Length: 221
Ligand SMILES: *Cc1c(COP(=O)(O)O)cnc(C)c1O
Image 1 (cartoon, rainbow, N blue to C red):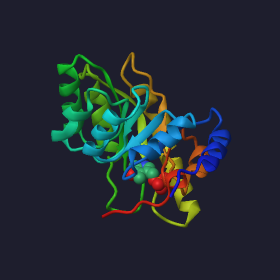
Image 2 (image 1 turned 90 degrees about the vertical axis):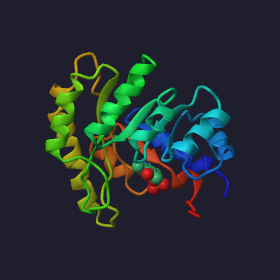
Image 3 (image 1 turned 180 degrees about the horizontal axis):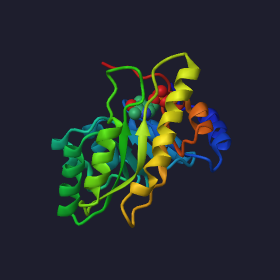
Image 4 (image 1 turned 45 degrees about the horizontal axis):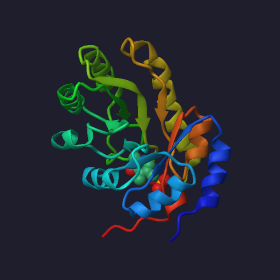
């Protein structure tokens, strides 16, 4: 299926400067990324380390690569040299490993802490206690910058439920702003995907992650 440029342009116009658009290209070939790149898109999101590393080497240097999947600590070193933002940091262990690997390269890596807001048990993310602990710990870490929060709503047609979940994340985002590390901008609330991005933006999202609306449904082998 070709990349849906028309849909892309509509969404870019609708978002305006309310939220940054991350185009989620996981499982899609580099040529599809190229298609959206040629239409002007620069922020792309990937879920798998090897796939991200491969696409990074094949595609233009000025792409800002977002890692949005579940990151294993032993794979951090492969993406730290070039990643723009790591969205799904859901443990202190992972946060410390990113700090360690970034330190070796003398870099500062921007991350978002993932909060569990959905009803499903299967989704990753911290609860509020873990979030607080991570923010306290971050004061000691010199090579990570916690720039905000990320969350995924329930996979549900109940849009009131989805809206309430986004609202709870926005409440945490505002509540923990004062806890952010000095010199590190608390600016990003990453929430909203193809099915629910409009609601997410209404509820205060500053960054949406949209894949299938542009690239079509994903086929997993
Ligand atoms: C796959 C994925 C998306 C994009 O999902 P679509 O429904 O295709 O827009 C967004 N965020 C995360 C964390 C994802 O894994």
